[in-house]
Amino acid sequence: MLRLTVTTPSALTDQVTELLADSTAVSTLSVLRGAAVRPVGDVVLADVAREGANDVVDQLRDLGVHEEGSLQLEPVTTWISRPGFEAEVRTPGSSADAVVWAEVAQRSYDDSELNWTFLSFMTLATLIAGVAIVLDSQILVIGAMVLGPEFGAIAALGVALVRRRRLLLGVAVRALVVGFAVAIVVTCLAALVARALGWVTVHDITGPRPSTGFIYSPDKWTFIVAVLAAAAGVLSLTSAKVGGLSGVFISVTTIPAAGNVALGLAFGAWHEVRGSGLQLLFNLVGMALAGWGTLALQRAVWSRVPVRRSPSKLARHVHAERPPGR
Image (cartoon, rainbow, N blue to C red; front, side, top):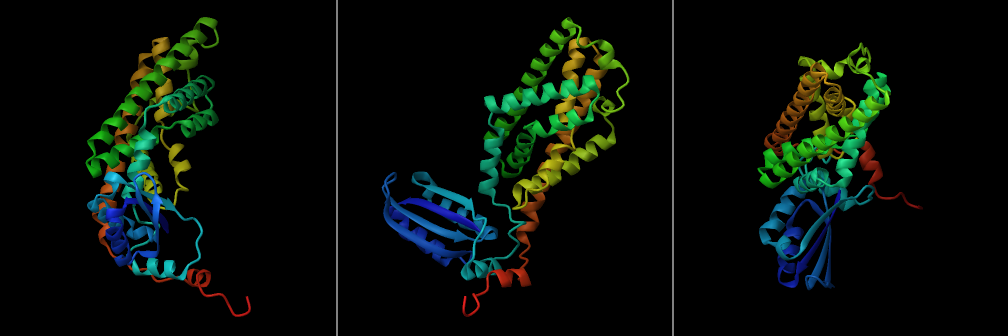
């Protein structure tokens, strides 16, 4: 269930209210006349079944509400409402499978914004990956993978391609290119300092590394894992279930590959640079393609299959009327 808040000029309030009242996905509707100061107008509140949110938002956008006012969607984590339960049953599809495109687009822009926070996480993650490579530590490699913020921007590439948003595509590409470039340069400089101090030698980079050798040895499995991980990650981002993201972060080697590129540049180990560069490229391409394919499938197939759910016994129990005497 989603809470929809519409701030609208008074001239559009009646149209907004009529539109929401006619939607089978809306379970409750409230109008606060004169509550809005900017713009001068009203505030309309509605509870909307997640699987019907796209249609409602599209119709409100067609009215032009967003041009002068605003539309806000917030998840309702806990709710007890028979009208809400019936609205979810009436609306085709499953709330867990539903992709709310306005929500996905907003998150994509947020995760792809090139700012100091994004660059800091990219740089810190790559520095940790560099230390992991020197120490040949899988634990530190996993830590670097989890810390890296690049997956949000990679997923945004798929959103931009499916939704045909050139601005988002440019924002995501810029974040990835600049982010990886800055992280590699800073890590390379840190490696040069460590080399001058005698903390790291070329043997640490080119010698046997049984625990982290996969970082510079790309193969067909590199691409396959990237595709599978990105598909799972996009599903987690677009659905109401986000539990799979941590597994995605530790399945792909973008950040460790960038760290190894930086070390290879610092020590002139060009074999490491080539291998890790290919590893990074395979991961980025595989994840971008998988994100695009998964989102395209969700839009073209799942959203067009009107599967009406059979309410489970648990749902009936939770949303049933309270027994007498309670």
